[in-house]
Length: 117
Image 1 (spheres, helix red, strand yellow):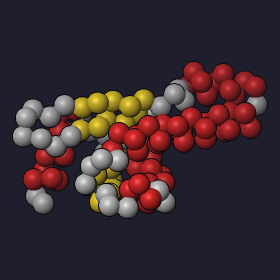
Image 2 (image 1 turned 90 degrees about the vertical axis):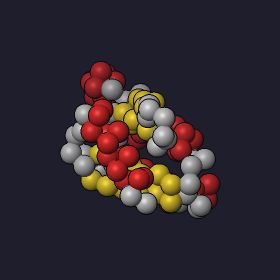
Image 3 (image 1 turned 120 degrees about the vertical axis):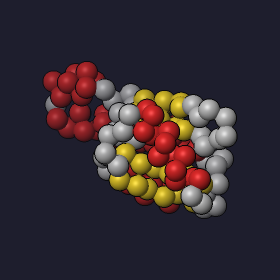
Image 4 (image 1 turned 180 degrees about the horizontal axis):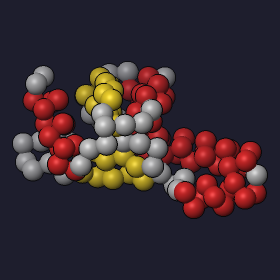
């Protein structure tokens, strides 16, 4: 995951599939907001990021174990938000730093992580 999109990969014995959650705060949105003022851009970015993280939280709240990984600090930001939410008290959430991975590398990473448990 990063600040623009998150791929939700459920570990299954069937062929794994990914669901993508996109952030509404795109580069076009950033440019448009920045033209108004830097303060407007930062407020818009914070609002959109909170909505993005909430959407991810809704998608993962029913799992027992979640691995957040990616090349940016987005996974840590989301982890910190989820730790504060009582809905995630029973969900084991772990973060792992990775480089930017291809789709196949992401599937292999998830498979290796959850198979080794």
